[in-house]
Length: 311
Image (cartoon, rainbow, N blue to C red; front, side):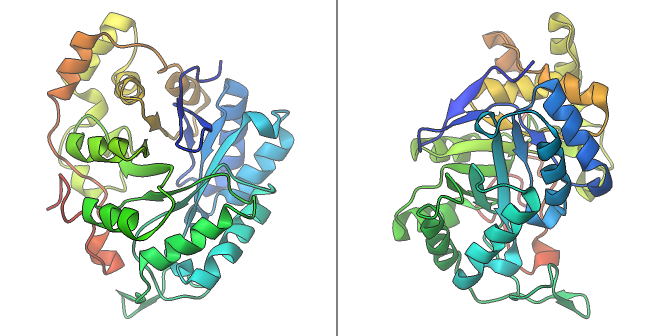
């Protein structure tokens, strides 16, 4: 079954609430996306830096799902922030995805790396950054809307101050903002600010510290095993992870869990169910302001300076 719940973007387009994330496991993504499409997912999230676009392209080509039923998001990487590099970067993504357009193109981070073919341009372990304003990058992204190569543009990992500056100095309001969001990092004020501007929220890492790549989450229990989520799950015959996703859906967000296991892929999609108000209130009380993804040090840029969970 497909994800029934969907949200409206400020462009008028519809985005399915439960999407399929494709970060990591590059060599297994073709099979994983094939399974996801079979299970009923219609919203696929990727990025050029993931290296998974070609695998997704093959899976989409093999599937019988009409393009009009799909919602595909990809992202501009930090080495292509020069305005003249933006459209060629999207062209490369489209070629890899074997598509003529994406539904949503996001600026992955507000930070720019040195322009060129190197994805992670480091010298002696230090990131080579570039003095390119994300405002200029965004203005180049705005022009993409005239080409038909993307139906909407958005952002990811912006702070409130960065978003406010973007809104003041550019003409297209982002259709979506993809941020780390889960019951342990709820960012209620920031979420409300985005929504007040008509910006849809997509939650990445909706299971918090489930991903072992996050050092910050290694010494504590897993979010999906939080006793409150597990207890609520029993009431609906669902798991703690399904409850975490259902919470995001209840807030009107999109959630993009990832998995390569067919049973888990199906289980995540079955998280499109309604939580009662009393259970949502219990989850609201779980906020620990725990942020697990902050690459400030390795990227040579200070992220999230005015947001919850910044250490």
